[in-house]
Image (cartoon, rainbow, N blue to C red; front, side, top):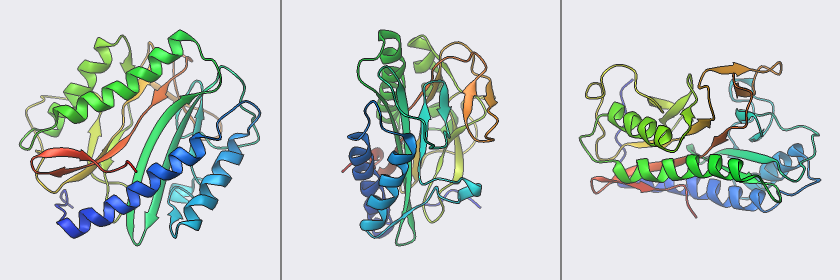
Length: 251
């Protein structure tokens, strides 16, 4: 299946789903403090999404057991919420997906609990700023691999490395569609599919400190770097409208 091109009505539907993701992220993010369990964050996200007429799309996706991903400290992505209580100094990735009227939304942030270290703040800033710098660089006619090159170059320039083996993705009637958008380049940048008007996709820098090679913990989901150090993750869904990338996962 090729990369879908969405019309205005379809993009409006995707905007609605992604705006709900943004509201859910803000709602759950406001709960992040010492003493709160990661499972409580997931349960409140599930309640909030359901109250707003949608479904937490991660729940049951590929057999994932919870409503959202909550990735703490060294877990870069796909952390499973449980009874672990947050403590001051933790950093926490919140990755949320919804399905609203058959259309999907997806976005993620990493936030600190109380006072975090300067190094962890730089780590979070790398993910966030790389995301926005990459979005600003997007142009119609650009190869997706050129976008991957922007992501990789920006991450390295900030003193970090991208997580390998995982990527951004298209989104629409399914939570994950073509294309796959790596945070690093494989092969030549000026080859493969190009960005076109009407495409909708997720960009998600996943940041490691020293080693980009991943490992998966015993829960079969939590992804860490082989360096064992803290990681960070940011994500937005964008639509190509008027030859530029418009962030639609904002409220």
